[in-house]
Image (cartoon, rainbow, N blue to C red; front, side):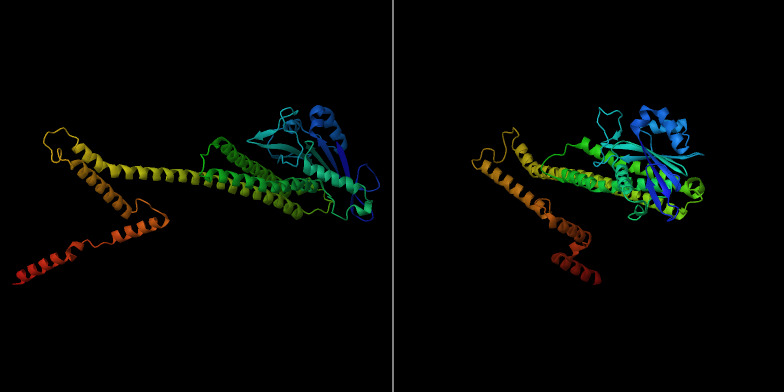
Length: 406
């Protein structure tokens, strides 16, 4: 457990940070950062210690929510404080234990693990409960430790320190949400991998179980982002409706600035949600193209089999006719009968193949499809009286007209 005190300098009116309590300057708020293991092992002592430090009397139901490692995102305001639970994706930069031998098992759905980060907000205190190894919060603590090494008048120059608990909580949330933007590249690479596996044609695709889990993982990210957006929306409504409940009237923090930061957080989460939705759509499109290619290959195979059947059907008919057991049959006792029949069969097969080729059913390429459509268009525009244009028939029609006139 670490405690940081945020003071306002009496003369310079700047915010500075301290690890010990002092009475010379105005205390703005306290930040108490706790590890989850400390709360789980000594929950009653921890609850009393938080009450002594921050005057926050934690509700028993809220304490159970904090101890629940699978609790979803939620924002629950009460009279003394507000409880905010934010589920964070465990990224490769984090060092949070997700192994089976860990003390508690994190929520792991289709390869994605998430961990809760709890915030207790009041006007003069912020209490966070997190897992050890949460990289964004530990980076903030490391920066605060560096700030403590400077002089009081130099602490607020590189970056303005927070002056309210809600401002610090929004900054911590922003650091965790910004880490989500780094997972877009790995997710995009995974989608490219599955697209290549689905659209390759040299072997059969068999990794359907892994692909199903990958698609469900994208849906899980979308659901998590939706929960976070709803939680941030409730926080935004609380800032609009009960701004004085979160920020002391003496503070210079404006409502518009807090709303701007909440809207920025929501826009970041929505970007991740939309990007994940697009990646899921890309996988679904690759699956559709895969099945369309299989259907096209099947139709091509059936077309080839149909052509073979159409070519051999007349030959089978001829062999069936001359295979009948009749004593008297033309050419049955002729020495040249066999060769004549073979010539007729070969000629029939060649004629059929030539006909199929003219109809673009054999050897069809990329341009033959366009030619086939053009031929169909020409066939639709054929004149139904083309027979009357035949020259002998035209002469006959003219003679008949002369007889009728006479």
